[in-house]
Length: 432
Image (cartoon, rainbow, N blue to C red; front, side, top):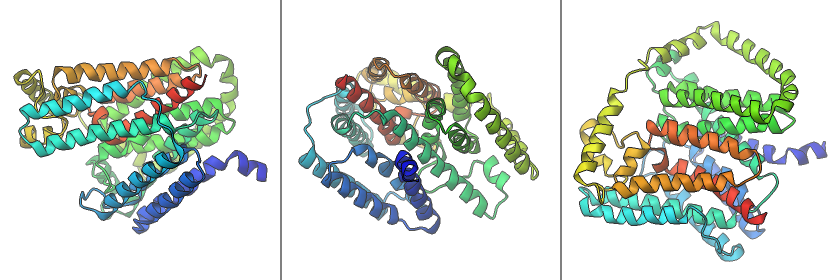
């Protein structure tokens, strides 16, 4: 029994954190996760533990509150203060900052461009927010690349972190649906699922990132059925959003992961046949149970009714961004948050496109985005572990495919995710 607990201790740790987060969300115990965050953080700093243990705390902390979308909330301030204090304490007590990292220069260029874009800004407040966002990205990356420790289980553990975070998202979505007085299918059909801590397009990012990582777990650990089932629960959250871009990303994942399995895991396919059959049976029975109330077909029909080929709303935003870019091609037109001003007439806060969002910093902003992506691939491809291909598939699916519909690289959560992966690869590459 003790050996089993020792082998699964990280899963147990994540299950406890996830359960606390969900409990906090359901019963409005908003400071429960904050208290855990503080205790685990202090323990990590005092005993110089691997900071990887703090990552799930950071990811889950804001998920335990139903009203975090309110920018004036005290909880946001508390989380920010605790995070800064812990990082500073850890840096002073335990760390030696000696590495700039491969993303240092792309981040620095973004900082410079975010300053220069003030020249054409129509709203200094929002442009200032954009600069602060880039500074935050840079500081997060610099911390991670200097403090994360190389460990043979890093890739497995980071995959589990994202998986369990995605399970919390799906669980909260199902809770909202189950407790609503409105018919479930109506809420799904009209895309009214609101968790209160981010909008529908953003809450699903952990799920999008986790899918290729679940595939890595299934192919590289013994408990294949367990992770297959959890992976399906994560994917369920994506389907519940009815997001065209997210479901398109899932389709791209399926194709690329299938090709990769045939190339690198042909000899191991026999190992997943029996677990795969059991998984299909479990999934089939579950779907038949829910289809008794027409839920499965209802969700599918709701998605198909979304007029999948209509992208007029997106093209309008792209055209607006290109018009502004032509007016101010050199220094951009106000920075990453200037869209709140330039798109006010549409009632939208961003261009829903990573590349157009980069153009708000001018031509150099767009060029630097590609340089930023190139540096990521350069770091990842250098590694010898097959995990790199799962991460590359994730980056292509989220950063490029989904990036045509959402400004992925300019959302704080997504950049945090990227910083974690790149830092882990860089730490390993420096060690060997």
